[in-house]
Length: 121
Image 1 (tube, rainbow, N blue to C red):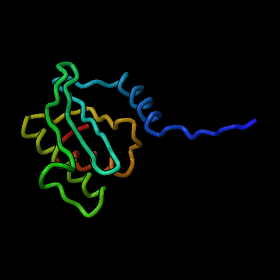
Image 2: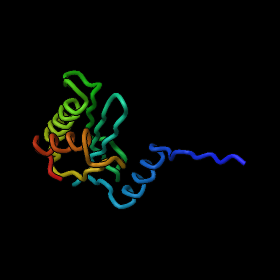
Image 3: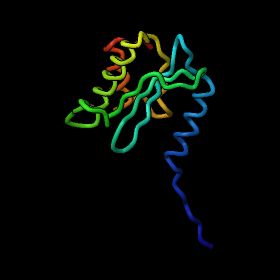
Image 4: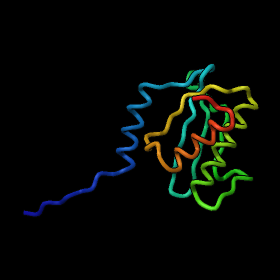
């Protein structure tokens, strides 16, 4: 008899965690949701009005002008860019959605840079 031990899929557990969080938080016109998605190579942030189902502002490491020596520096640049674009559209208060990721590293760097550049959450 052979017993196979399978490691849990990290992305599936992250998606389950994200689903539990999404049941509790939602963005609206007054306080849209700042969503973060992190891949191995890039990081993406978007400000979403869930009631209308519309992305109001977005930024990622794929945008022009986002530079950094490492991925954490790039995440800070994305946080600053998404905050700048949101403030231009008169969005100051948001709900932070970490996307099921731990509030650490690149996600934390993006959030702190967004706060420093005018977003409140």
